[in-house]
Amino acid sequence: MKTISKTFLILIALAILAPGAIHAQNKKSKVGPIIKDGMTQVVPEFKDPEKWIIHDLFVESEFDSDGDGKLDLIHVDVTRPAETEKGVKLPVIYVTSPYFAGTGTANKEYFWNPRHELNDPPPARKAFPEWSPRNNRPVISKSHVRTWVPLGYVVVHSSSPGTGLSQGCPTVGGDNESLAPKAVIDWLNGRTKGYTELDRKKKVKAYWATGKVGMTGTSYNGTLPLAAATTGVDGLEAIIPIAPNTSYYHYYRTNGLVRHPGGWIGEDIDVLYDFIHSNPYLADSCDCNVRDGEMLSNQDREKGDYSDWWAGRDYLNDLGPLKAAVLMAHGFNDWNVVPEHSWRISEALKEKGVPLQMYY
Image 1 (cartoon, helix red, strand yellow):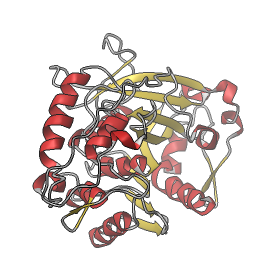
Image 2 (cartoon, rainbow, N blue to C red):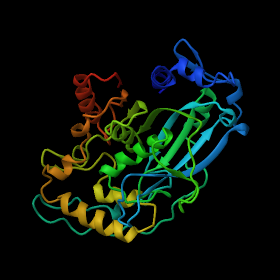
Image 3 (cartoon, rainbow, N blue to C red):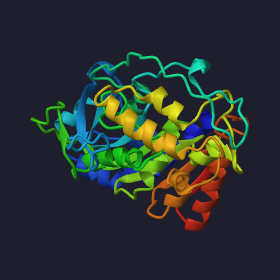
């Protein structure tokens, strides 16, 4: 992981800091990122956590996945140096996740019973028990903050649609999971609206951001940077997907057979939906339309065949707009998200010609 961190430092420094532009923007304060040998260094004025500014907000997306007639709002938190209130503008390290508010039970009695014959209807699955999410404000997550803020970055987190305080429905690979982080990056660039509260009365702007963003994460959290990059959103300069799930068919099916990820016997895409669905707003509507409607109708545990629906959850089919620099990282001993997920995307990105590094 130290090797990944060092490579990430160099990649982010080269891709999103743009030293000349940063210093031009911050010439009045003379405070900003310090770069030595291609790597950012600790900035003395930024290293004291007691002086950091921490706040949260809600960014307006371009979708209404819960069907309430209003564009879904995405919950976002921000940690930044106090100097950003004095005109200093900084690039952003951004992490988004469906897990920040907690998850449902991992008790296998609520998963699918894998003991059924191919082409036979599966036994019914027991309903997930209710659970209470962690919706702490203003802090969604503390990940990456102590590493990156002292080095001259703002750290931003957001909860995926239908999780935490983010509105909408979880879709596990649906378009809204790509468009939600796009909305946050658009907000960081002044292209969409942000509000201090869910009532949408008071607007908030990212006046402290340069607009340059780097994203990272592992597993599901590593899938989402790739998902965001497939939108081609301006400002997303570099992504580090670590062990990303790049195809939900490859994760839950193989060559026409139902399979289960390593360690999660009986899991399927609707189980993952229940596992992450932590926002109770319009929960019945989301459960009915997404989980019990779309997912149960298309996941096909009887045959396990590939379909257009599964193809819509394969990021290999969405790489056209991607232009961000990519560092793809994966462990060869990963039997949950197997290394094929990273390899297949890396091979396609080689042909595409975007800046690419791989760490396996």
